[in-house]
Amino acid sequence: MLVSLTVGKVDAGVTVLLTPDKRLIEFPSILLPPDISSGSIVDITVARNTSSESAAERAFRALQEQIFAAFGAAEPVAPVLRCRNATQTSVVLEWDPIQLATADLISLSLFRNGQKAGSIPNPKTMHSTKISGLAVDTEYAFHLVLRTTAGTYTSERVVVRTHKMTDLSGITITTGILPAATREGLGKAVERIGAKLVDGVRIDTTHFVTTEGRGIQWERANELNIPVVRPEWVDACEKNGRILGVTKFYLDAVRPVGPAGGGGGGGDSSVTSPVQTSHAQPSPQTQKELPEPPSDGIAGTSSRSSGGTGSDEAAAAAAAAAAAATKKETGVGREKEDDDAESDDSSEGDDKGSELEEKARQDEQKIRADERDQQGLAVRPKPAAVDEDDDDEDDDKDDGSGGKGGKSPDGASFQDVAL
Image (cartoon, rainbow, N blue to C red; front, top):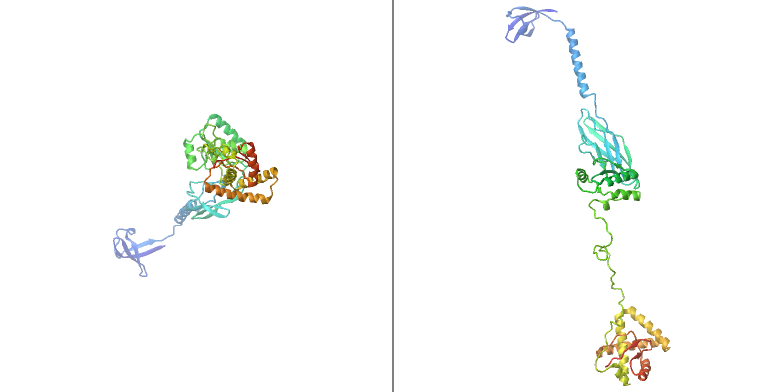
């Protein structure tokens, strides 16, 4: 298409052209011939360039495909979760590295039995976690939830059942410094109980077995709070057929010792000799523990040999006071015992064991004990008591035998005391 235009005004940048119908068109001056001026007529040919259009369209579509391949073809992938190891009270879970494509990460969370258990720190670098404090022989369901700028993605549910106490297959042991023979025996014991031995401390290591507390692996086990035990723990588990607590088998635990020998003092301090409590009955004084009779110039036998009535009464009072003092020392239980003995002996000797006479005798003993306290007599305590009638009979016998003491009707012996 050919168009004839008249040059109206020529400037350095833009030239004003006039159409035959008097319309103004601004046209770049650089595209016009250099020798034109106002009033010149120029012919301009206008045509469509289809080949150029096709080339431009092909270039544009190639750019679109490149952008789509870089930013639209890939998308985040749902996490793949699996169980790495399980014990009686813990579970170790692991998953493949998360794939975010071109999206940005918001969070990665772990759910247990449908409830959020916590968020995974550093999910781009951390690919495993350990859940402790679980119940023995209990089933749990876990799954991961990945949140990104491109959407939310959930992993498949993983069902894990914790082991029974008799199932030792979940034990994973890392060894430290051990003697060669001990290490060989430990390996055989671990194989027999169905446990595992691994090199180096890992997240699924349940116990660190060593005999010396040193080394890089020992330090790492302490950092991860892994129990450090002696090899005896494995032997004890095998012997009992179940997993045992590690308290008594810690490397730094005090080993139990037996009771000390005769010369040692290292026995159990909690085991003490039995002590007499406040409820125990005091034992009565023996013959050796009783006070010695007075050794003054006037002997008790000489006073009895005189045959006076006053000496007989004094001897009876002394015997009654001795019985009362003995009863006070031996307590209520001993008093009842002495009363029974007195009643039995008197019934055998003199056939006077009736209840009335016994009551009268006890009253008389109390009266004579009071008299003894008033007179301040020092007598030898004797577990016996006599009445007046029996004293008269004994006095007669003593007069005939020389007056060297006698026996009460109940069979208890006593010794005369000078007044």
